[in-house]
Image 1 (cartoon, one colour):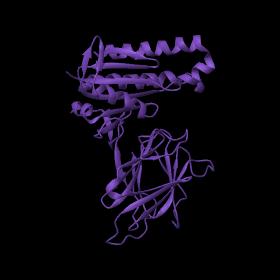
Image 2: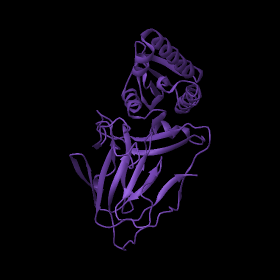
Image 3: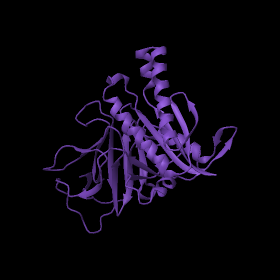
Length: 313
């Protein structure tokens, strides 16, 4: 039968066990897991099983599942404000809809596997959902943003994934003019390929090979192994003859262009985007002004491209 699967996972539990000790940490994690299960059941979901510091639940429809995970993130966020920073365990959640086979009280199927992988790929305090789950919302006022096709290990096809915004305030992504002065653009300029390098890693991607992801896990096409880098930190896509960098991270992305006279030295992107042109550096998870920041050098070929930004207003 077609159902919607939710996998909710607590991050940072290993650190909590080190600080609190096994007995107290186990009690804390157990209470949180029970609370997650109660939220699922309050939204007509069924807890299939708990896996260490995670919960697998199934729902009859997408809206019920999304309502449950929104309540989880909002309530848990308020709870964490009163916790010491080292003890905060954030939620990362995956949601997927599809055919699920139930055998002896357990659940199997592609949707189960995808929900589990999305929970791993999502950053702390994020909800990632498949296009099939989001499509069921229809006239809902739930805010979400497409991350495009995401490579899921073990699947030949890349599903379109959305990040669900759970903050109480209404947020919209609107294109606004950038305060930066764009460089001149010739009428026939167009993006052809981009070269990326980090330490001794160097890769070239053509416009036809995009979109790709920059991130910490193997699912990213360009991997930067640093704890400040999110699992999938940023996305590069070819759009209207331009190479667009989109931040999808927890801690932000910074961009610095070479030879930009009169422009600020760095552009900070927090769930924003900009067009890459010429050459420069991309900082993942820390400003480029920090000498230790994970920094990718980039160089675009086949034309200079103008700069624009997408931001929250």
